[in-house]
Image 1 (cartoon, helix red, strand yellow):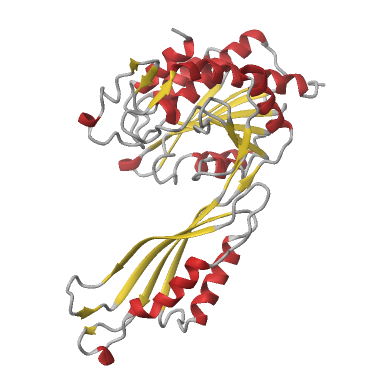
Image 2 (cartoon, helix red, strand yellow; image 1 turned 90 degrees about the vertical axis):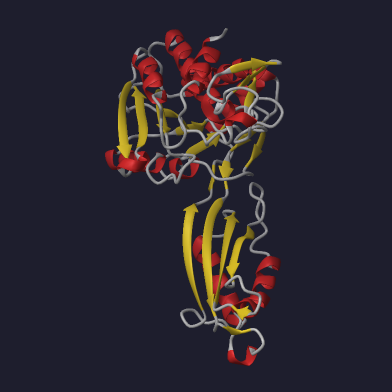
Length: 390
């Protein structure tokens, strides 16, 4: 059994359902301390939702720094009886390792740690610093995790040059896809106000669903931007509509519509908000009088174009697996959106993601060692290309 596999099993055995770290970071920190890392725990959040964050660095902060980032928390398992085996007992079947977090993202964390151990043993005095940024609040609200650590690092003036986030980005084989950016996310809650009344006397009422329906139709058909070479066009989707009293003979007094933008670098939160309000105005809806609208920006888009980090990662994948990795910005958000605010080059690379958040989540055993080897190769490549300490 490989060192990486043993560490994956040890991590999966800890039921770290968000925001509980369940000792995962202590296990990782213990191994990092043995190879010269300085480790500190930063906690955040209310007592009932206490988040554990680990910041670890090897080096004096004067050299270029590669950060390995990720999360130790996992999503709930759902009904345990729906699993073929206990979700927190690592189980081998048919060349796969089953357990919650095997794919998202304890395999990546273990591979990162083992890669660093091997690198430090081979290169005791590298020309780069190495750091780890781990949180137990990625699968949760993400208010007290990576974003808090990034603010603290920014306050201290700590240098970050490159970051690899261990999100499960691959499709068929480890390394076939790299995320070199992510779309931004912005949610809105639109409350349209009408006048409640008897459905048989519509002249005495004002139906807010009828008021907003033409605007919704236009919103659904609006082209917000064309995207670009790295991003698909911005999309707008309604997630929930709530209106009515439950009775079939009552015109509702209001309707609440929840929606979300996933936006490219061709748009900004401000530009999208302005266009949204202008569209409502064209349909006779006045803010404050006819509607209220609350916005939540969950994250800005980020992009790392081809450069030192992307080239090193693609070269490492090519060397270790013979794959020409595809660059992609598809999918949901990740903590890369926070790290990109303090680190100029951020990519995501991890194992295949077909079973993440599912019952019987698993990782193919044959994908584990290649991931470790790729992370290790990246360390060597960046070390060789780094300027000398002088």
